[in-house]
Image (cartoon, rainbow, N blue to C red; front, side, top):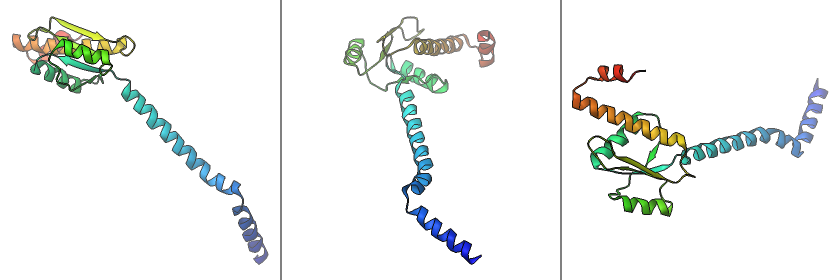
Length: 159
């Protein structure tokens, strides 16, 4: 029994001195770290792929749009800029600081809404998300003026 322990100790000490032993221990750890780094990098790319859009409208409309965007899961990134004119926003759009501008001229019923964007940075899905967001705000405003309850709105809007 004593001989087998001596042989095991000598074999173990010989193997520890070789780099293959350390590679066997640290390779899975290194692989896991590389995988976590790639996952983090991909998540950052997805976050940055959402276009940044400025809203040129009154404060009330801006707050309603931002609040409705938080409630919905559209993941549209509206910049919290204080742009008051369309010309100023278009300068930012041309400089590359913005990907799109949501311009609302008529504040009461959201009938005159224009959207300016760069074609290469904004996809059709983000335009549809903005349309859905504005549609929900418009239905809420109309329901409030007509005095409808939330349950009545849901029955009207449901497919």
